[in-house]
Length: 305
Ligand SMILES: [Zn+2]
Figure 1 (cartoon, helix red, strand yellow):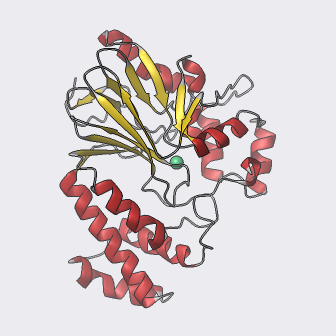
Figure 2 (spheres, helix red, strand yellow):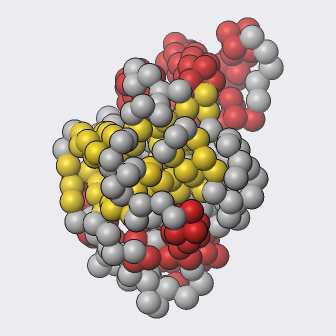
């Protein structure tokens, strides 16, 4: 078993004394799945994008002979994190807003026609539709289990020799986003909370949401961060550097405004080198964020309202 990092999507990795993680797979947008193993039980982090995805993790854990799953924690409502909920029957835990939206998802029609209609109406993203059809071509029997337990703010779980804090943090990606912090091991599952808002037109970052979130996440004192669609864990030092880059780009967009060329001309000197594709995408996200009403980023689609 690898200690850190593996490109094998079905291979369980270990980080810290109590934490395991299954790498993401961008073929069908499978996110990282996590397991925090205590003496009395195991916390599963995210349910995966299908029962098959969830079962990859559950089978690996059974093979290891660790304590059985006790809870499944959902970091947010997006399909790729919740469509594997029917693979086990242990209680599902999520923030109050995640619980509300996933309960609405459980009632939705997931046929091709219904998905296409939601894309046309602006209530689903074409990327998610195509990835979902690739992962789950037959969705006639799809069951999404809504969370059994919800919390406001934060909840602590003692699994026996290891304690996890599940903390609602919000952010541009979703107002409902939560993180799972494994104390002692100093490992944090970020879900997608550092992503941009994908559900309201062009992907968008807002300085008002992202900057306080960065401060808060760095304040936990984690040694390693796991972002749900990144293939490798991010060290505390790398996270601090990435946060500084995001802040520089966000501040520059704020200062210069909508002149994209002027922003791209100013940034290399401020960032100490040429711009990457990721930097340019980040500029575009902050530019899109300038046009967002303050209450739009992170809100759920119309079917959940
Ligand atoms: Zn997401």
